[in-house]
Image (cartoon, rainbow, N blue to C red; front, side, top):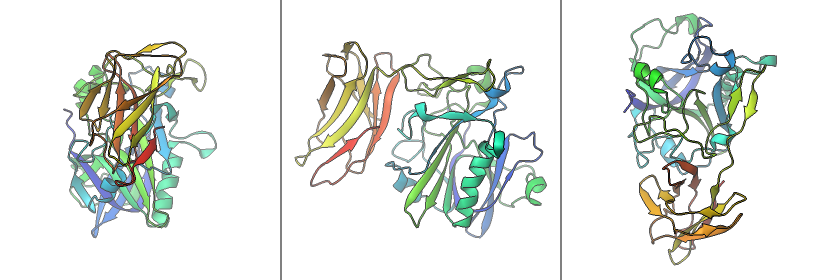
Length: 353
């Protein structure tokens, strides 16, 4: 497991500024919580890449969801003010970009820290956080709590440095680093990814910000190390041998989870669909429920576009919602999505995007 002191920092924005000097690839944030000020640092550019790589390889993947409606939202809102430890598990409300169905990696894109027309990652993140300050929204940073050894770390940006003993970094995916990088950083692991959340209490709406590095793999083993393979459940790639980088989308998924259901009698089921143009043999495929229970799918063949309803044992799906993952015979995730749950008496249906 990576050397991550996994914690959540909750508070209200006091100040936001690009790190100083400008060569520092971070955005700095000061939060106020319980009468104290805390420091968080968010990557806006990679410094992990090998010397000589195109500049575009240093751009981060980002995804901003302005209506993050996930079963984890109640556990995020339950975090106390200030800095608090997060249990590294699904049940503990920890984040995992590959196992928690937080978003579809296909939707991620890269963005330079400072783009044309003042539209780079720095400006976009600053805009979100400045609005959070203006509206007095609660902000949550998940990441690594580090012991501050520089009492003047943020002086150049803010004129002072908060006196609290810890700061928070690694507010991004923390798994899938190649071994050459992980041997140096020791950050690979599962259920300890970092992210940012902004809660608009007036609108009862959560905004989520997810960041990752182009060098990170989108399939990892149980200790967060990369696994080779592509199933369509990855972020796009970019060819930076051409100007701004040509977008290369992942291969199409062979199958996809489409809906989850629980009838009034308590009987749960999940529907999956063959998304390919060819017959699909489901021998060796599994469905993982809430990151703990692996269910073997029927050894049957689906025609092109054909759905299959899989009946589960009573109690398999939670009324408060959860996560489903479709896994191929090679052990790679093909589709991971959150189901919303619903009324425990009337039953419910949940579409899986």
